[in-house]
Structure formats: structure tokens, C-alpha cells
Image 1 (tube, rainbow, N blue to C red):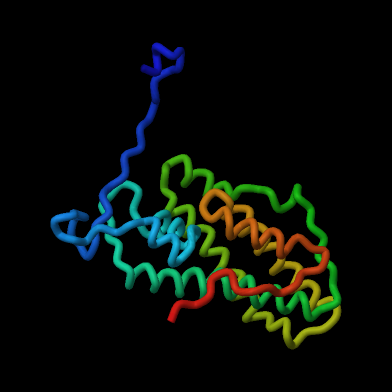
Image 2: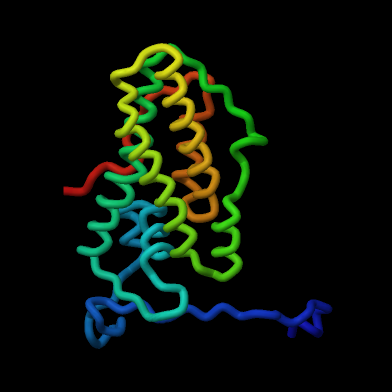
Length: 202
């Protein structure tokens, strides 16, 4: 069909593994089917994207349960990325500093992420992003900007803002809605706090 349309044949076909539920194959007869539209309506599109891309192995069978999903949501999204963005934005809002945005600096895809994408290792790519999230959070905790003033405070906040802007850009392929929200919030020059990206689940 491709050749008849004057299009070259595919050089590579990516075939992912199966998704199981509690270790069992998904089957109507077992009554364990999950409607993805219902899941998206309840939790949002990006949280579902995140789980499927980060916790489902691209080449092997992987398991899904709502308990695992909610643990990942609270751990990685609410307490991880969401908390980092919220606390940094609040610290910036409480300061009197400007944070100029230079698109040529921040719109750079991490080379390791690019390699992972070329290998269809979306899970590995997101591990790289979340390592940056953890490192930025650790940087803020260790430098305690809430105790600083003047140039020292500006230096810590500027470094944190720079990291978050890089994180947002590198998330575009995976969590486009979230990346857009972060970029809009951290566009500068003034940065203000906003509602949480991922409200914690009970």
C-alpha cells in the first residue's frame, strides 16, 4: 500500500507489550476492562499520559491498578513536580526580582532524552526529567532561599527558575498541557504563584 502511494516502506515498527490489571490480561469475560476515557475524565489527560509513559515498559508487559496509579500521581506529580513548581513560584512572587526569559537558552532538548526517544524508551526519558526535578528540589532545600536576601537570594531563585524552565521544555513531548502551564507561569519577568498543577488525591 505504501509503495503504491509512492511512499517508502517503514524501516522500523514499534510493538509494545500488553497492559495487565492485577497481573491478569484484560478481558471482558474477567470483567476487568478499564475505559480510558473514564480514567482521563477523573484524573486528567497528563496524569494518564505520565503513568503510561513512565511506568509501562515499552517492550515488556506491564501492570496497571488504580492503587498504583494514585500512588504515582501523588508521589511523582503532586508531591514531586507540582510541589516544586508551587514552592519556587511562591518564593519568586515574594521576592522583588525579575526573571527574564530567553527562548534560545531554555528551548534545548536534553541529549539523553533525545537518545531515549530514538530508542522508544519513554520511561527512561521521563526518569531523566524527574531526576532533574529531584535535583532542583534538593538544591532549594539545601540553599534555603527563605533565609537569604539580596544577591544570594536572587542567585538561588534564578538557578531554580532556570531548572524549572528546562524541565518544562523537556516535558513537552510527554505532558504537553502541564509543560504549557509551567512555561506560562514561569515566562517572567515576574513570576507569581498559581493553583497546584496536581491537587493531591485523598
